[in-house]
Image (cartoon, rainbow, N blue to C red):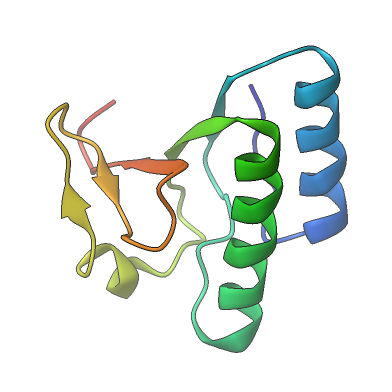
Length: 99
């Protein structure tokens, strides 16, 4: 489990490396992940997704109050009720009220 990365790539990457070192295949991030608009937000998502994909880690994310909820509107719902973005299959996002 992790939380409050707030888009901090270096901190998030250190956590992902620790997950991988412990052979973790499923991680949960609890609020303030860093789902942000613009180039910075896209770079953050791409970097973290690549790291998770390379290490075989799926991440389930509960969004917090510091997220870009406009992006949530573009997400799709999977069979289990989790939201996802097509370009980031390792990430699943909990819809509001899901938790």
